[in-house]
View (tube, helix red, strand yellow):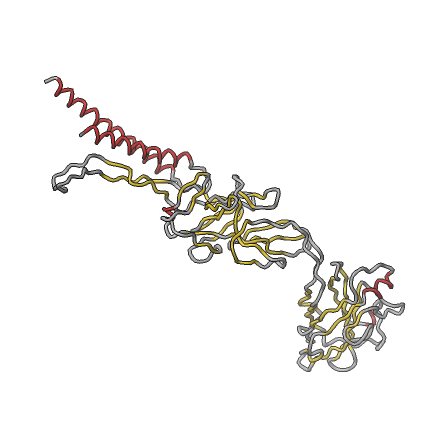
Amino acid sequence: MGFQHGLSGLNVASANLDAIGNNIANANTVGFKQSTVEFSDVFANSLGGGGGNKIGIGTEVAAVKQQFSQGNISTTNNPLDVAINGGGFFRMSNEGEVTYSRNGQFHIDNSGYIVNSQNLNLMGYLPDAAGKILQTEPANLQLSTADINPKITSKFSAGFNLDSRTVSPAVLPVFDATDPNTYTSSTSGSIFDSLGNSHVMTLYFQKTPTSGTWNAYATVDGASSATGVPIGVDLGSGIGLPQSIIFDSNGILTTPAAPLTTTISLDLIATDLGTANNASTPLVFSMDLSKATQFGGSFGVNSLSQDGFASGRLAGFSVGGNGMISGSYTNGETRNLGQIVLANFSNPQGLIPRGNGGWSESSASGTALVGVPSTGPLGALQASAVEDSNVDLTAQLVNMITAQRVYQANAKTIETQDAVLQTLIQL
């Protein structure tokens, strides 16, 4: 049966060469996983059972298995090129049919969906209207290009130090926003109305003869009367009136003990400036001065913040290691646009290759375990990068030489058997 031995050896050697050739051909294919051929020997069965002196009848291909080891990661210039560093697969959808891939070369189609070169949709979690990610059933990721709506200011916070060595102005109690001699120091910050229009609010601090006591005034957009009195701004004591700020002997703020309710009459300010106001009025927000101090140091502003912003357009986006896609807007705000999910399997070797860098789930692979990147066995994502093929060209070329020798040896077996038969025929 030498012919059968040699023929089976030729078949498996040919299959091995095919696998090696396929590996080499895909050495530059992003996300490709190399395959190896596993062999097994073959014995004939008999009714009498096996004996200890049986000779096999050749070999066969037991399995062709892909090796899901990590490939090298290469950087690119496309922010939607995403590499998986660790375990897991991208979850792709073809009109509802789900496949899995390690190829993270994506782009945005004309409808805003994130797709690959075969127009399969990348899947993940979608956000609600406020940008909060809803971790429910994964869906096709679509990046919204809508403008972000403006947000009216509801909180204003200022942290500063007022110089305890300051001498009270000689003109007390007169205050004129246009006369620096009537106040000690000042600082400015932006606030936003219901339409997202920015207004400049300036705080003025005036030292009083009473120890540790200051008067605070405010103007918006510089609106003031002919005598410099603020128009349309109420820090808590009334429009144009001062608000007392009191510190104890250690320079710690005691009054106001709670945030001030600040009211801005935008219509009065617009009338004074000769402009139109189409936003809702008055603008009411809380002003937190709890970080204010009075120490023996020069005046300085430590922090100044508020929670309003103007409308903005999407200027760009980025992908984080946890799959979060964050949009950057022209107003300086960021908002979550979606989150990429990954899937892993108990037995990746059981996945069914589909071509184009994709696999399908099977009973052998087990059910897909879907989750957020960087959690559990799922790897982290790296944006502007791709995972190279895990093919080692040097090893594959050496394997090719070995497989070629095996093929030649099996061919020699057939040639030898042919010579033996020829000898028998000539007897």
